[in-house]
Image 1: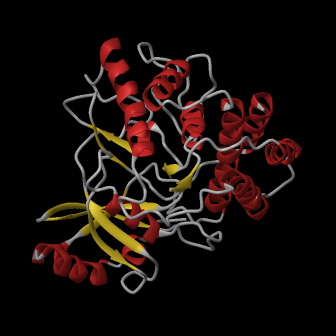
Image 2: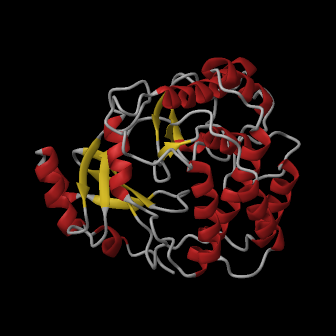
Length: 340
């Protein structure tokens, strides 16, 4: 399905709103370009003589309940603006009058988004790659250390019973987006529901904390300029973030995640065990139940992959095609069962 940028972004309406928000009439002559890599909400670079901004909006087509809530992304980033967690400044938020759906515009923060390869000449030494890894973990520790009440996010979620609801929610998302039966997914959901551990603490959680959802400083691999993609953020059990981090942080011995190509398998990057140790030391968290959280991460990502596959097949991903993910979804479920 060809991408119709004019229909998705509606610059004829968005441009005047940007002029009002920024005071710069150059935004009347803006262009929009889809940023590749996004697999849920659609992200565009807006360019004019005034510079560049970033637009986020939901995908096209029918949306799952509670998904793609732009207002939540706006709220959490605005609330974290004065904390140790680096975030982009929100320029504009609209409930649907401008382009027909909720959207928001934020600053384009300079930095590297690192996916399948490192930029040429960037973090070439083992020491720099270790710095990249540890700054990544330290940023997650910083997020989990934020007092949600102090930043006005005390009602951003319901921490009590968080994991039970997460298992139910993602089981429901599976039922809503499944295209065929996968017995291993059903069994993993059953075991997760039956084995939820006690929650040690409640914090702001990102929900999708991985290396290509942060912006690394172009001149300093030890510095992260912004954390991106807050679609799944809420209040809850911080070990869910750590479980996903350990899933995404692939080693040389791991199979690749086709939806999330990475670089952490390259020589010089510490392994996931080193990252878990650093997190535990910095946060004081008890990681004795990590097997459950790693199993849940595999389950959640399998459901996300199924949703991406379904939306892609329906032509609701702005022309992006991610192919058949059935084997990967099955493999994620099987590994999740091993963890639990």
